[in-house]
Length: 532
Image 1 (tube, rainbow, N blue to C red):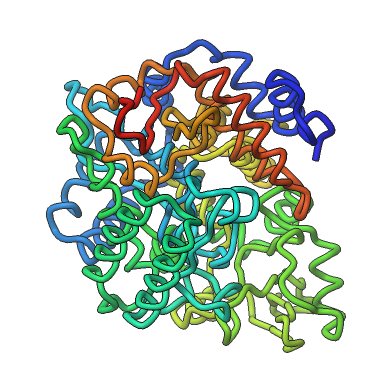
Image 2 (image 1 turned 45 degrees about the vertical axis):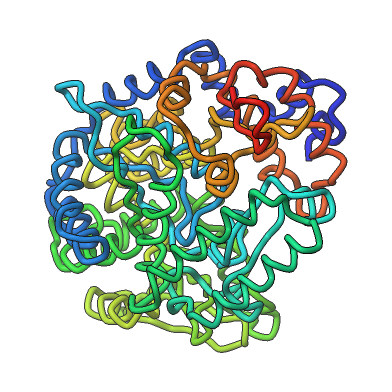
């Protein structure tokens, strides 16, 4: 990690290190440091995309997914909102989402207004399901920030719902959690409370959350659908007032991308078909995105495919070309395109972590078949190609997306023969500007003595929920203050594995408390002191 964030002596030095590491954060702060979050969210609406294709099929598929999972009324409402404003959150990972950054960006996105000044009825989240259950956001179970020092590494307690054998299984490939899994998680939570590793109010909140998980049940066909229902219930628990009436709707991004591919794979007029199946365009695109975050490392992928014996687990750093393979254990298989020669068909090649070779013809028919069988999932690039670039949906993501999605757009534009540096579609299409990120801004913090910690759903529920006055104050927090409040999660995100030290977490939470503890909305468990 950057030396300025190793052991922060001052908040300015720590934040300077973050800005050095994350160009999108530096660019945004330079322009919007003192902008109120309510004004910033309003400004997102002024960037409208000019789609290369109609987005009506995207809206129809999102509405269909919503209708099937959480009911017809929300299906109708989300379609109305997307026609009014084709914007979605895209930084969130799918699964039970108790990650503070996700929760906070959902809160900010709920501030959006319709053209008549009314609040949007829904908060549409396209959540990435091609991530392992044990990743940073921990869809395997629950994250608890407000825990005693001995409860969790780095000050965060991880309470698993799925067993250890599921750690590397993808959210998109996971079956539903069972009643037995919930019983084991409840028992583990009760022991943590009995051992005083978690505060009592957290125990009460966990009882509420586990009851909600049990009510959702395991009648859903997969974990992805369960998570949509769970996250909607958790969202409703965050408020004790009446101001925020928007419904949170998580939709698995890959599911929507698969449905759009059913059309685009066979339609020669679509940008996706042209880039996947025209050898010249495909070659330019592969070269243009080689080494780009969210895409692929061509050399690394080819080397892995040629050396089956060396495959030892998934290496997410090398990415994948266009699609992830999904093995029999529900784990990622990186793939790359091997071009055909002398009239032979190009193929997707790879090796899973058991050493099994993969070879799939790169044709519309074969790709469609493998997608239906869930042996392939669209990659992040392919999902954004279909949704943001082709259909012009504004994807409001995080500070990494603010860099890589514009790079994807420029590479697509170059492959299609646009002028150098000109993105596909019109300027401002999708998330072509760092202005269009929300993940990394936190307006609600949890106060614990002289420390200010991130507030996820468990902390907010345990505090009694956000009241109307506090919700109104969220919009008064500035962009700069919200970034300072998010430093804890920034450091956890950018630190190399094994480097994030418990001592650093303590230092940062105290610095954040001193800087913005009286400027953002704060909650606590102390009944004798009202939250700010």
